[in-house]
Image 1 (cartoon, helix red, strand yellow):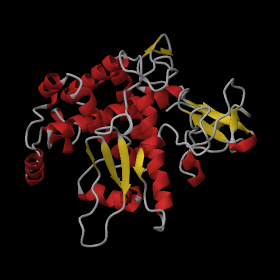
Image 2: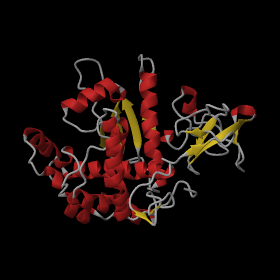
Image 3: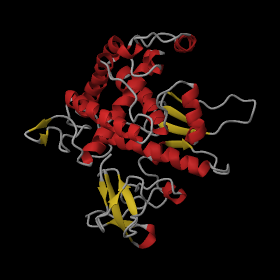
Image 4: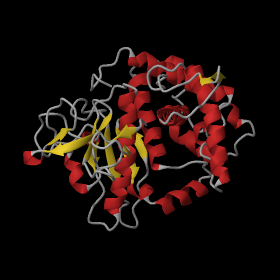
Length: 361
C-alpha cells in the first residue's frame, strides 16, 4: 500500500480514512490515479479533489453506509457504485445486529484486494462484461439452524465469503481448529481471487501445461483429494514444496495459496518502500532497493525475494519483542520460491498485454 498525505494540510492519512484527522477535509480514493484525495464539497453532493485538475466526483453509493471511501467515475450520477463495489452481488443482511460492522470489515479487505489487482494491472471483468464467469462477491450469512453453514470459496467467478469470518473470535477459533498459521479476511480474499485468476490466466490463458508442470495435475478429483488430505498426516518435508499445509490438498489450492502469498509480498513490500524502510543489501551506505523499485510493476523477482526475506526477519523480531505472533510465519524454501516465480512471470507477461480499466495506474 502506498503512503498517502492530505493535500489540504500535509497530514499523513491512510487508505480507509474518510476524513483528515487534522484539518477535517473529506477524503476520497481515486482508483484511476491510485490516490487518496482531499476533497472540497460542491453543490449537489459532488466533491472536487483539492489542487487537482479533475471533474467533480461523487462518492460511491456505499459511502452512505460508511463502508466505502472510493469515488465513482467522473461525470457519473450520484448513487453510482465505485470500481470496487460494482463487483458486489450480495451483502450481509443489515437487519442482523453487528452485520454493518462485519460488512465494513469485509469491504476494507475487499478494497485492499482490488487496489492490488489494479496496481498489478490484472484483467478483471464484472458480471455484466462476462455473464458466465465475471467476478462477483457474495457476502453470506449462515442459514437457519439445520441447514449447512456457508463456506468461503470460489466457483466460476463467484467468490463467497462467509460473513462470520469478519468476527475476530470466530476466525481465530477456526485458525486454531484448522491448525493454520495465518487466517485473515484479506488472506481469504487473496486466496479466492487466486482461483479466479487460475481460470482467467491459466485455464483460459494458454498456460495449463506450464502450470501443471509446476503445481501438479489439476484434473485430479477435487473432493477425493480434499478427503485424502484431511485424513492423512502431513509428511515431515512438506515445506520443501508447499507454502502452507493446505496447499498440499490439490493443485488448485496450491496455486491459490501461492498466489495469495505473492499478493502478500508485493503489497507489503510497497508499504515498506513507501515508508522509506531500508530493506535488503546496502552499497556505499545506500539501500539497493528504494521506493523507485515498484514491486507491482518493475522489481525483478530476485530483488523481491532479496527484499522480502530480511523484512520478514526484522518484523517477526519486532512482533516477538511485543509478545505477538510472527508477522509472517512461513518458510519460502527453494520449491516455494520456484512457484512464486512462476506466478510473478505470469503477472509480468499479462501486464504487457492486458487491457486496463484505468490507464494511469
